[in-house]
Image (cartoon, rainbow, N blue to C red; front, side, top):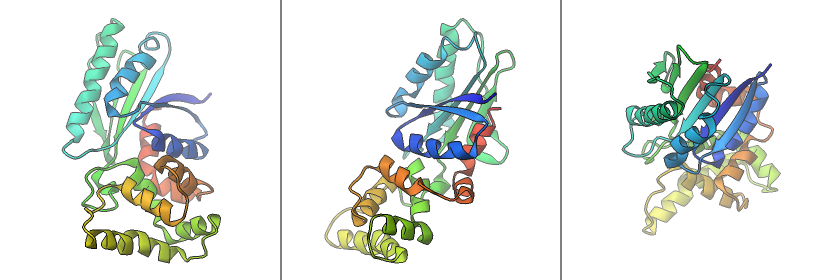
Length: 240
C-alpha cells in the first residue's frame, strides 16, 4: 500500500516538480494542495487535516520559500502555531517539537508520540539561489539550475526549434541581456523567476514560470532529478 502524503505548496511550480518526482517515488501517493501563497498555508492545514487526525494516519509536507528577512526558525514557528490550532480544534493536547534532519538543515520534522501523525517542513535553502544576490530562495531556483545545464539548454532549444547552441542561450540569459538592461538603467534581476521569464522569452516560449518548470522537467534524466531535488525527496522519505 502506498504511503499517502499531503503536500502543502505555496504555488504552482511546486506542483510541477512534485508531479515529476512521482516517477522516483512509486511507494508514495503525493497529494498536492496549492495554497496560493505562504499566508494561506496554515488555513489549508486546518481545512485538510482537522477531520483526519483522529481517524487515520496523517503524513504532511510543507514546501516553503525563504523570503528576504525570513529565517528557518520563524517559518517553523509559524507552522508550529498553525498545528497547535489544528490540534486544539480537534481536542488534541499536542505541542509539535520540530527538529532539523541530520543531513539537511533546511528540513524540519516532527512525529507525534501519541498520534499516527508525521509532518515535515522543507524550506528552500539559501544554497539553492542561482545568484547569491537574489532576494529570496525558491523552488524556481532549482528549476533554473537545471535549465542552465548545457545539455538541458540544448534540448530546450531543439524542442522550441531554436537553432542555437545551448551554451549560447545560457550566455545570453545570464550575462548579455542582464548587462544590457543594467546599462540602460533597469534594476538588476533579483530572483529566479526573473531569469525564468527571460529564459522563456529568449526561447520564444511565452509562458509562465510553472509551465516553464514543466517544460524543463519533461523527459529529464532520473539521476539528474535525484541530484537536483535531493532535499525534497529526503523530506518526503522522512515521513515514512
